[in-house]
Length: 96
Ligand SMILES: [Zn+2]
Figure 1 (cartoon, rainbow, N blue to C red):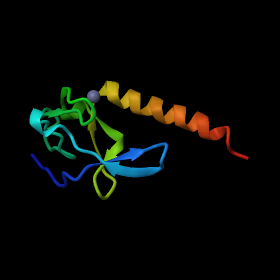
Figure 2 (figure 1 turned 30 degrees about the vertical axis):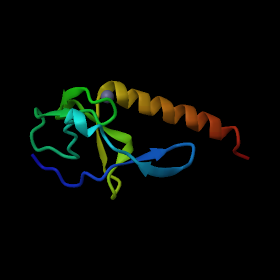
Figure 3 (figure 1 turned 180 degrees about the vertical axis):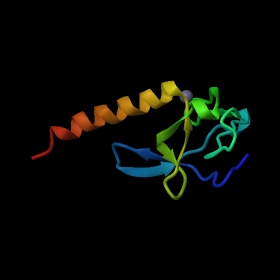
Figure 4 (figure 1 turned 60 degrees about the horizontal axis):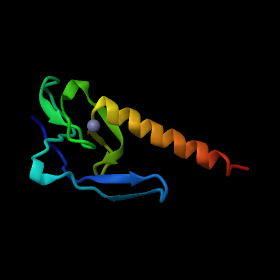
């Protein structure tokens, strides 16, 4: 197990800036930014679902100080991409 930096921040698409993000500590979520063991059980940083680290995706929004993404489950990965796509569709209309 390697846990490097538990500082979390979440990218706010509308404001185009990071905001503090805290996973629910009372649930004991384990959201390492990196694991050597791909079979190690971790929690999705978005929803808390327990998944093997090797089945997680790098979050599009929840990062540490240096920009590395925390693990998210497949469903949350899709949700993040959909949010991003919706945002891109909206801002495209304002491009000149
Ligand atoms: Zn999830």
